[in-house]
Image (tube, rainbow, N blue to C red; front, side, top):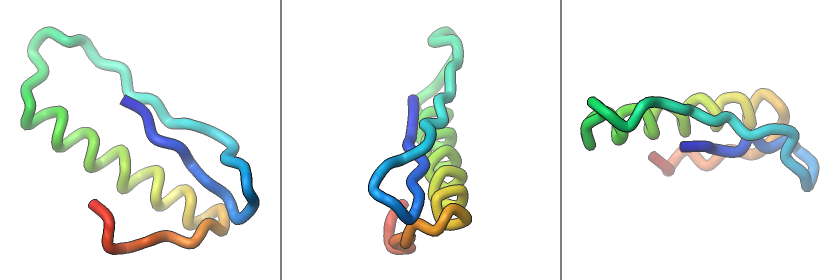
Length: 57
């Protein structure tokens, strides 16, 4: 799974990717990890000057 990190400009400087083995990962794990990935990339984007919508997941 992956999520972009945005800046105040029109481009995004990076994408954070999470790689994990398919074996042993549950739907609960995927839900929890994707939520944490989005929280983390949203925080990075905010630090880089991108306006962040706090209503998202």
